[in-house]
Image (tube, rainbow, N blue to C red; front, top):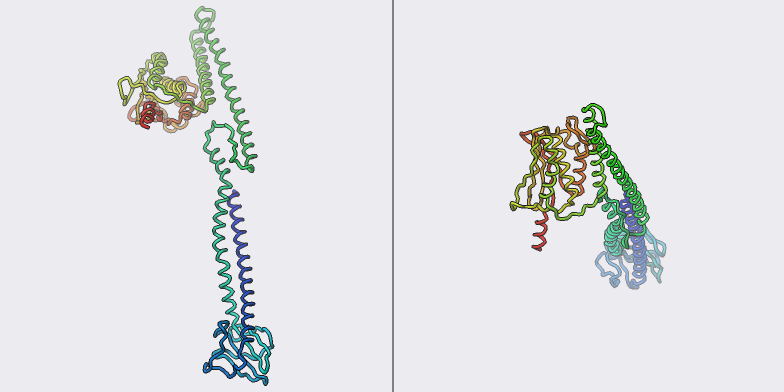
Length: 454
Protein backbone atom coordinates (compact mmCIF):
# COMPACT_ATOMS: atom_id res chain seq x y z
CA UNK A 1 0.00 0.00 0.00
CA UNK A 2 1.38 3.38 -1.00
CA UNK A 3 2.13 5.77 1.86
CA UNK A 4 1.86 9.52 1.30
CA UNK A 5 4.18 10.13 4.25
CA UNK A 6 6.89 7.83 2.90
CA UNK A 7 6.49 9.22 -0.63
CA UNK A 8 6.85 12.81 0.56
CA UNK A 9 9.76 12.08 2.91
CA UNK A 10 11.55 9.92 0.35
CA UNK A 11 11.45 12.47 -2.45
CA UNK A 12 12.16 15.46 -0.21
CA UNK A 13 15.15 13.82 1.49
CA UNK A 14 16.46 12.43 -1.80
CA UNK A 15 16.09 15.85 -3.44
CA UNK A 16 17.91 17.60 -0.60
CA UNK A 17 20.68 15.00 -0.56
CA UNK A 18 21.16 15.20 -4.35
CA UNK A 19 21.13 19.00 -4.25
CA UNK A 20 23.68 18.97 -1.43
CA UNK A 21 26.02 16.67 -3.39
CA UNK A 22 25.81 18.90 -6.46
CA UNK A 23 26.35 21.99 -4.31
CA UNK A 24 29.35 20.39 -2.58
CA UNK A 25 30.89 19.45 -5.93
CA UNK A 26 30.38 22.96 -7.24
CA UNK A 27 31.82 24.51 -4.08
CA UNK A 28 34.91 22.26 -4.23
CA UNK A 29 35.56 23.12 -7.88
CA UNK A 30 35.10 26.80 -7.15
CA UNK A 31 37.51 26.60 -4.20
CA UNK A 32 40.01 24.68 -6.32
CA UNK A 33 39.83 27.25 -9.10
CA UNK A 34 40.24 30.12 -6.65
CA UNK A 35 43.17 28.33 -4.97
CA UNK A 36 44.77 27.82 -8.36
CA UNK A 37 44.41 31.50 -9.16
CA UNK A 38 45.84 32.41 -5.76
CA UNK A 39 48.89 30.18 -6.20
CA UNK A 40 49.42 31.37 -9.76
CA UNK A 41 49.51 34.89 -8.38
CA UNK A 42 51.95 33.72 -5.71
CA UNK A 43 54.26 32.10 -8.28
CA UNK A 44 54.22 35.24 -10.39
CA UNK A 45 54.92 37.42 -7.33
CA UNK A 46 57.83 35.21 -6.26
CA UNK A 47 59.34 35.21 -9.75
CA UNK A 48 59.14 38.98 -10.06
CA UNK A 49 60.47 39.55 -6.52
CA UNK A 50 63.70 37.56 -6.86
CA UNK A 51 66.80 39.67 -6.03
CA UNK A 52 68.88 40.67 -9.03
CA UNK A 53 72.05 39.52 -7.24
CA UNK A 54 70.77 35.95 -6.65
CA UNK A 55 73.20 33.48 -8.25
CA UNK A 56 75.00 30.16 -7.63
CA UNK A 57 73.61 26.63 -7.51
CA UNK A 58 72.28 26.52 -3.98
CA UNK A 59 72.67 23.29 -2.02
CA UNK A 60 71.92 24.71 1.35
CA UNK A 61 75.24 26.43 1.70
CA UNK A 62 73.82 29.81 0.77
CA UNK A 63 70.84 31.52 2.24
CA UNK A 64 67.87 31.75 -0.07
CA UNK A 65 65.98 34.90 -0.85
CA UNK A 66 63.54 36.41 1.62
CA UNK A 67 60.11 35.97 0.00
CA UNK A 68 58.12 37.53 2.81
CA UNK A 69 56.24 34.36 3.69
CA UNK A 70 54.72 33.96 0.21
CA UNK A 71 56.70 30.80 -0.53
CA UNK A 72 58.20 27.95 1.44
CA UNK A 73 60.39 24.90 0.79
CA UNK A 74 57.74 23.54 -1.58
CA UNK A 75 58.63 26.24 -4.13
CA UNK A 76 61.47 25.53 -6.53
CA UNK A 77 63.39 28.53 -7.87
CA UNK A 78 65.63 28.31 -10.93
CA UNK A 79 67.59 31.09 -12.71
CA UNK A 80 69.41 30.95 -16.05
CA UNK A 81 71.80 33.63 -17.32
CA UNK A 82 71.69 35.19 -20.77
CA UNK A 83 73.84 32.40 -22.17
CA UNK A 84 71.35 29.74 -20.96
CA UNK A 85 73.46 28.38 -18.11
CA UNK A 86 71.73 27.50 -14.82
CA UNK A 87 73.11 29.97 -12.30
CA UNK A 88 70.73 29.26 -9.38
CA UNK A 89 68.67 26.31 -8.21
CA UNK A 90 67.01 26.01 -4.79
CA UNK A 91 68.26 23.12 -2.70
CA UNK A 92 66.58 19.72 -2.21
CA UNK A 93 64.28 20.12 -5.21
CA UNK A 94 64.09 18.47 -8.64
CA UNK A 95 65.73 20.18 -11.57
CA UNK A 96 63.40 21.44 -14.30
CA UNK A 97 64.36 22.22 -17.85
CA UNK A 98 63.82 25.70 -19.03
CA UNK A 99 60.20 26.05 -20.07
CA UNK A 100 58.53 28.72 -22.19
CA UNK A 101 57.65 31.96 -20.39
CA UNK A 102 54.35 32.10 -18.59
CA UNK A 103 52.45 29.36 -16.78
CA UNK A 104 53.00 25.67 -17.54
CA UNK A 105 52.07 22.34 -15.96
CA UNK A 106 54.63 19.51 -16.13
CA UNK A 107 55.07 16.06 -14.60
CA UNK A 108 58.11 15.00 -12.57
CA UNK A 109 58.02 11.52 -11.15
CA UNK A 110 54.68 10.92 -9.40
CA UNK A 111 53.79 14.61 -9.08
CA UNK A 112 52.48 17.37 -11.25
CA UNK A 113 54.10 20.80 -10.98
CA UNK A 114 52.85 24.23 -11.86
CA UNK A 115 55.57 26.57 -13.20
CA UNK A 116 55.87 30.21 -14.08
CA UNK A 117 58.75 31.66 -16.08
CA UNK A 118 59.63 35.27 -16.79
CA UNK A 119 62.29 36.79 -19.04
CA UNK A 120 64.29 39.47 -17.17
CA UNK A 121 67.33 41.58 -17.96
CA UNK A 122 70.36 39.29 -18.45
CA UNK A 123 68.55 36.26 -16.96
CA UNK A 124 65.48 33.96 -17.06
CA UNK A 125 63.71 33.16 -13.73
CA UNK A 126 61.45 30.17 -13.30
CA UNK A 127 59.41 29.21 -10.21
CA UNK A 128 57.64 25.84 -9.72
CA UNK A 129 55.22 24.48 -7.14
CA UNK A 130 53.52 21.04 -6.65
CA UNK A 131 49.87 20.89 -7.79
CA UNK A 132 49.10 18.84 -4.65
CA UNK A 133 49.64 22.01 -2.58
CA UNK A 134 46.84 23.63 -4.52
CA UNK A 135 44.56 20.62 -4.00
CA UNK A 136 45.24 20.62 -0.26
CA UNK A 137 44.37 24.27 -0.01
CA UNK A 138 41.27 23.78 -2.19
CA UNK A 139 40.15 20.95 0.10
CA UNK A 140 40.65 23.07 3.21
CA UNK A 141 38.75 25.95 1.66
CA UNK A 142 35.96 23.60 0.57
CA UNK A 143 35.71 22.08 4.06
CA UNK A 144 35.52 25.52 5.62
CA UNK A 145 32.77 26.38 3.15
CA UNK A 146 30.90 23.06 3.36
CA UNK A 147 30.66 22.58 7.12
CA UNK A 148 27.62 24.90 7.39
CA UNK A 149 26.02 22.82 4.63
CA UNK A 150 26.84 19.63 6.54
CA UNK A 151 25.12 21.05 9.62
CA UNK A 152 22.21 22.48 7.65
CA UNK A 153 21.39 19.20 5.87
CA UNK A 154 20.44 17.09 8.96
CA UNK A 155 18.67 20.08 10.50
CA UNK A 156 16.69 20.54 7.30
CA UNK A 157 15.86 16.82 7.20
CA UNK A 158 14.63 16.93 10.80
CA UNK A 159 12.57 20.00 9.94
CA UNK A 160 11.10 18.19 6.93
CA UNK A 161 10.18 15.21 9.11
CA UNK A 162 8.50 17.53 11.62
CA UNK A 163 6.67 19.57 8.98
CA UNK A 164 5.42 16.48 7.12
CA UNK A 165 4.30 14.87 10.38
CA UNK A 166 2.49 18.05 11.44
CA UNK A 167 1.03 18.50 7.98
CA UNK A 168 -0.40 14.96 7.90
CA UNK A 169 -1.50 15.05 11.56
CA UNK A 170 -5.11 16.02 10.68
CA UNK A 171 -5.41 12.92 8.51
CA UNK A 172 -4.07 10.77 11.35
CA UNK A 173 -6.48 12.42 13.79
CA UNK A 174 -9.37 11.79 11.39
CA UNK A 175 -8.37 8.13 11.06
CA UNK A 176 -8.08 7.68 14.84
CA UNK A 177 -11.41 9.40 15.38
CA UNK A 178 -13.14 7.07 12.94
CA UNK A 179 -11.36 3.98 14.30
CA UNK A 180 -12.40 4.68 17.90
CA UNK A 181 -16.05 5.27 17.04
CA UNK A 182 -18.58 2.67 18.04
CA UNK A 183 -20.65 0.89 15.43
CA UNK A 184 -23.69 2.97 16.41
CA UNK A 185 -21.97 6.37 16.27
CA UNK A 186 -23.00 7.92 12.95
CA UNK A 187 -22.77 11.58 13.93
CA UNK A 188 -21.06 13.82 11.34
CA UNK A 189 -17.41 14.67 11.77
CA UNK A 190 -16.74 18.11 13.19
CA UNK A 191 -15.41 20.76 10.83
CA UNK A 192 -13.65 23.65 12.54
CA UNK A 193 -10.91 26.15 11.88
CA UNK A 194 -8.18 23.56 12.42
CA UNK A 195 -9.38 21.37 9.55
CA UNK A 196 -7.10 21.94 6.52
CA UNK A 197 -8.86 23.00 3.33
CA UNK A 198 -7.21 20.09 1.48
CA UNK A 199 -9.07 17.44 3.49
CA UNK A 200 -12.34 19.34 3.82
CA UNK A 201 -13.79 17.64 0.70
CA UNK A 202 -12.89 14.25 2.22
CA UNK A 203 -14.53 15.16 5.54
CA UNK A 204 -17.62 16.48 3.78
CA UNK A 205 -17.87 13.30 1.71
CA UNK A 206 -17.54 11.17 4.86
CA UNK A 207 -20.22 13.25 6.59
CA UNK A 208 -22.52 12.75 3.63
CA UNK A 209 -21.88 9.00 3.76
CA UNK A 210 -22.48 8.91 7.53
CA UNK A 211 -25.71 10.85 7.08
CA UNK A 212 -26.94 8.37 4.46
CA UNK A 213 -25.97 5.44 6.68
CA UNK A 214 -27.76 7.05 9.62
CA UNK A 215 -30.89 7.57 7.52
CA UNK A 216 -30.84 3.97 6.27
CA UNK A 217 -30.18 2.60 9.77
CA UNK A 218 -32.93 4.72 11.29
CA UNK A 219 -35.33 3.64 8.57
CA UNK A 220 -34.51 -0.02 9.27
CA UNK A 221 -35.02 0.40 13.00
CA UNK A 222 -38.24 2.30 12.46
CA UNK A 223 -39.50 -0.43 10.15
CA UNK A 224 -38.70 -3.16 12.69
CA UNK A 225 -40.33 -1.20 15.49
CA UNK A 226 -43.42 -0.40 13.42
CA UNK A 227 -43.69 -3.97 12.19
CA UNK A 228 -43.39 -5.36 15.69
CA UNK A 229 -45.95 -2.86 16.98
CA UNK A 230 -48.39 -3.55 14.18
CA UNK A 231 -48.07 -7.32 14.61
CA UNK A 232 -48.45 -7.28 18.35
CA UNK A 233 -51.94 -5.75 18.40
CA UNK A 234 -53.70 -8.16 15.99
CA UNK A 235 -51.97 -11.18 17.55
CA UNK A 236 -53.10 -10.12 21.02
CA UNK A 237 -56.62 -9.61 19.68
CA UNK A 238 -56.53 -13.05 18.05
CA UNK A 239 -55.53 -14.64 21.32
CA UNK A 240 -58.36 -12.89 23.17
CA UNK A 241 -60.86 -14.02 20.56
CA UNK A 242 -59.64 -17.61 20.79
CA UNK A 243 -59.93 -17.57 24.56
CA UNK A 244 -63.39 -15.97 24.41
CA UNK A 245 -64.64 -18.45 21.81
CA UNK A 246 -63.25 -21.34 23.82
CA UNK A 247 -65.08 -20.19 26.95
CA UNK A 248 -68.49 -19.58 25.39
CA UNK A 249 -68.35 -22.75 23.28
CA UNK A 250 -68.65 -21.02 19.92
CA UNK A 251 -65.33 -22.53 18.85
CA UNK A 252 -65.56 -26.25 18.19
CA UNK A 253 -62.67 -28.63 17.97
CA UNK A 254 -60.55 -30.88 20.09
CA UNK A 255 -59.10 -29.37 23.25
CA UNK A 256 -55.60 -30.48 22.33
CA UNK A 257 -55.84 -28.67 18.99
CA UNK A 258 -56.98 -25.47 20.68
CA UNK A 259 -54.17 -25.78 23.19
CA UNK A 260 -51.55 -26.14 20.44
CA UNK A 261 -53.06 -23.20 18.59
CA UNK A 262 -52.88 -21.04 21.69
CA UNK A 263 -49.26 -22.08 22.28
CA UNK A 264 -48.35 -21.08 18.76
CA UNK A 265 -50.06 -17.73 19.18
CA UNK A 266 -48.23 -17.21 22.50
CA UNK A 267 -44.92 -18.00 20.84
CA UNK A 268 -45.59 -15.51 18.03
CA UNK A 269 -46.54 -12.84 20.56
CA UNK A 270 -43.35 -13.51 22.52
CA UNK A 271 -41.29 -13.27 19.32
CA UNK A 272 -42.89 -9.95 18.39
CA UNK A 273 -42.26 -8.59 21.88
CA UNK A 274 -38.62 -9.65 21.67
CA UNK A 275 -38.25 -8.04 18.23
CA UNK A 276 -39.78 -4.85 19.57
CA UNK A 277 -37.41 -4.86 22.55
CA UNK A 278 -34.39 -5.51 20.33
CA UNK A 279 -35.45 -2.72 17.96
CA UNK A 280 -35.73 -0.29 20.87
CA UNK A 281 -32.31 -1.24 22.18
CA UNK A 282 -30.75 -0.85 18.73
CA UNK A 283 -32.40 2.55 18.37
CA UNK A 284 -30.73 3.83 21.57
CA UNK A 285 -26.97 3.85 20.88
CA UNK A 286 -26.26 6.34 23.68
CA UNK A 287 -27.03 5.37 27.25
CA UNK A 288 -27.97 8.06 29.77
CA UNK A 289 -27.26 6.63 33.22
CA UNK A 290 -29.03 7.64 36.42
CA UNK A 291 -28.78 6.34 39.98
CA UNK A 292 -31.02 3.29 40.32
CA UNK A 293 -31.48 0.53 42.90
CA UNK A 294 -30.34 -2.76 41.45
CA UNK A 295 -31.97 -4.54 44.38
CA UNK A 296 -35.36 -2.99 43.59
CA UNK A 297 -35.01 -3.95 39.92
CA UNK A 298 -34.11 -7.51 40.96
CA UNK A 299 -37.08 -7.79 43.29
CA UNK A 300 -39.42 -6.48 40.58
CA UNK A 301 -38.00 -8.90 37.99
CA UNK A 302 -38.34 -11.85 40.36
CA UNK A 303 -41.91 -10.79 41.13
CA UNK A 304 -42.80 -10.48 37.42
CA UNK A 305 -41.41 -13.95 36.66
CA UNK A 306 -42.83 -15.64 39.75
CA UNK A 307 -46.01 -16.77 37.94
CA UNK A 308 -43.97 -18.41 35.19
CA UNK A 309 -41.71 -20.02 37.83
CA UNK A 310 -44.70 -21.40 39.74
CA UNK A 311 -46.15 -22.76 36.50
CA UNK A 312 -42.93 -24.72 35.94
CA UNK A 313 -42.62 -25.59 39.67
CA UNK A 314 -39.28 -23.78 39.91
CA UNK A 315 -37.89 -22.21 43.06
CA UNK A 316 -37.06 -18.60 42.12
CA UNK A 317 -35.27 -16.36 44.62
CA UNK A 318 -33.06 -13.29 45.11
CA UNK A 319 -29.81 -13.30 47.11
CA UNK A 320 -27.59 -10.38 48.15
CA UNK A 321 -23.88 -10.96 48.74
CA UNK A 322 -21.41 -8.57 50.39
CA UNK A 323 -24.22 -6.20 51.37
CA UNK A 324 -23.05 -3.22 53.38
CA UNK A 325 -26.29 -3.07 55.37
CA UNK A 326 -29.29 -5.40 55.72
CA UNK A 327 -31.29 -3.02 53.51
CA UNK A 328 -28.48 -2.29 51.03
CA UNK A 329 -30.15 -0.98 47.87
CA UNK A 330 -27.13 -1.72 45.62
CA UNK A 331 -27.34 1.73 44.00
CA UNK A 332 -25.72 1.77 40.55
CA UNK A 333 -25.46 4.13 37.61
CA UNK A 334 -27.48 2.63 34.76
CA UNK A 335 -30.48 3.04 32.49
CA UNK A 336 -33.36 1.55 34.55
CA UNK A 337 -35.54 0.18 31.74
CA UNK A 338 -32.63 -1.52 29.95
CA UNK A 339 -31.34 -3.16 33.16
CA UNK A 340 -34.89 -4.39 33.90
CA UNK A 341 -35.12 -5.88 30.40
CA UNK A 342 -31.67 -7.48 30.79
CA UNK A 343 -32.49 -9.11 34.12
CA UNK A 344 -35.97 -10.13 33.00
CA UNK A 345 -34.62 -11.87 29.90
CA UNK A 346 -31.97 -13.71 31.92
CA UNK A 347 -34.52 -14.94 34.46
CA UNK A 348 -37.07 -15.85 31.77
CA UNK A 349 -34.43 -17.72 29.79
CA UNK A 350 -33.27 -19.61 32.90
CA UNK A 351 -36.84 -20.62 33.85
CA UNK A 352 -37.65 -21.85 30.33
CA UNK A 353 -34.57 -24.11 30.27
CA UNK A 354 -34.78 -25.42 33.83
CA UNK A 355 -36.75 -28.65 34.36
CA UNK A 356 -39.61 -28.88 36.84
CA UNK A 357 -38.52 -28.91 40.45
CA UNK A 358 -35.38 -26.97 39.59
CA UNK A 359 -34.07 -23.75 41.00
CA UNK A 360 -33.17 -20.29 39.64
CA UNK A 361 -31.28 -17.80 41.83
CA UNK A 362 -30.59 -14.13 41.14
CA UNK A 363 -27.44 -13.10 43.04
CA UNK A 364 -26.42 -9.48 43.58
CA UNK A 365 -22.85 -8.88 44.71
CA UNK A 366 -20.41 -6.04 45.33
CA UNK A 367 -16.88 -6.03 43.91
CA UNK A 368 -15.19 -2.96 45.38
CA UNK A 369 -16.57 0.07 43.54
CA UNK A 370 -18.39 -2.17 41.07
CA UNK A 371 -21.60 -4.16 41.35
CA UNK A 372 -22.45 -7.35 39.48
CA UNK A 373 -25.23 -9.87 39.23
CA UNK A 374 -25.48 -13.60 38.50
CA UNK A 375 -28.42 -15.68 37.32
CA UNK A 376 -27.82 -19.30 38.27
CA UNK A 377 -30.08 -22.19 37.25
CA UNK A 378 -30.08 -25.96 37.61
CA UNK A 379 -30.89 -26.71 34.00
CA UNK A 380 -28.92 -28.79 31.50
CA UNK A 381 -26.43 -26.00 30.80
CA UNK A 382 -24.92 -25.23 27.40
CA UNK A 383 -22.33 -27.31 25.52
CA UNK A 384 -18.92 -25.64 25.63
CA UNK A 385 -18.80 -25.40 21.84
CA UNK A 386 -21.97 -23.28 21.82
CA UNK A 387 -21.15 -20.84 24.62
CA UNK A 388 -19.86 -18.20 22.19
CA UNK A 389 -22.75 -18.57 19.74
CA UNK A 390 -25.71 -18.27 22.08
CA UNK A 391 -25.49 -14.47 21.89
CA UNK A 392 -26.20 -14.55 18.15
CA UNK A 393 -29.65 -13.46 17.12
CA UNK A 394 -32.18 -16.25 16.49
CA UNK A 395 -29.65 -18.90 17.50
CA UNK A 396 -30.99 -21.89 19.40
CA UNK A 397 -28.76 -24.79 20.33
CA UNK A 398 -29.43 -28.27 19.08
CA UNK A 399 -30.26 -29.50 22.58
CA UNK A 400 -32.45 -26.51 23.50
CA UNK A 401 -35.76 -27.36 25.07
CA UNK A 402 -38.79 -25.26 25.75
CA UNK A 403 -40.21 -22.34 23.82
CA UNK A 404 -38.06 -19.44 22.80
CA UNK A 405 -37.23 -17.07 19.96
CA UNK A 406 -33.45 -17.10 20.16
CA UNK A 407 -33.40 -13.35 20.88
CA UNK A 408 -33.27 -13.24 24.69
CA UNK A 409 -29.50 -13.47 25.10
CA UNK A 410 -28.98 -11.29 22.00
CA UNK A 411 -30.96 -8.53 23.73
CA UNK A 412 -28.95 -9.07 26.92
CA UNK A 413 -25.67 -8.79 24.96
CA UNK A 414 -26.84 -5.59 23.26
CA UNK A 415 -27.78 -3.95 26.58
CA UNK A 416 -24.48 -5.03 28.15
CA UNK A 417 -22.58 -3.56 25.20
CA UNK A 418 -24.35 -0.21 25.52
CA UNK A 419 -23.60 -0.09 29.25
CA UNK A 420 -19.99 -1.28 28.67
CA UNK A 421 -20.56 -4.29 30.91
CA UNK A 422 -18.82 -7.64 30.84
CA UNK A 423 -21.12 -10.56 30.08
CA UNK A 424 -20.01 -14.16 30.57
CA UNK A 425 -21.59 -17.62 30.57
CA UNK A 426 -20.17 -20.73 32.19
CA UNK A 427 -21.53 -24.08 33.23
CA UNK A 428 -21.66 -24.85 36.92
CA UNK A 429 -18.71 -26.85 38.20
CA UNK A 430 -19.66 -30.16 39.82
CA UNK A 431 -23.40 -29.54 39.38
CA UNK A 432 -25.85 -29.16 36.50
CA UNK A 433 -26.89 -25.75 35.34
CA UNK A 434 -25.60 -22.48 33.93
CA UNK A 435 -24.30 -19.27 35.49
CA UNK A 436 -24.69 -16.00 33.60
CA UNK A 437 -22.58 -13.17 35.07
CA UNK A 438 -22.91 -9.45 34.40
CA UNK A 439 -20.14 -7.28 35.88
CA UNK A 440 -18.97 -3.70 35.62
CA UNK A 441 -21.90 -1.66 36.96
CA UNK A 442 -20.59 1.43 38.72
CA UNK A 443 -21.72 1.79 42.31
CA UNK A 444 -23.41 5.17 42.80
CA UNK A 445 -22.45 5.45 46.48
CA UNK A 446 -18.79 4.93 45.48
CA UNK A 447 -19.06 7.78 42.97
CA UNK A 448 -20.64 10.00 45.63
CA UNK A 449 -17.89 9.23 48.17
CA UNK A 450 -15.17 10.01 45.63
CA UNK A 451 -16.84 13.31 44.74
CA UNK A 452 -17.19 14.21 48.43
CA UNK A 453 -13.52 13.40 49.04
CA UNK A 454 -12.48 15.70 46.21
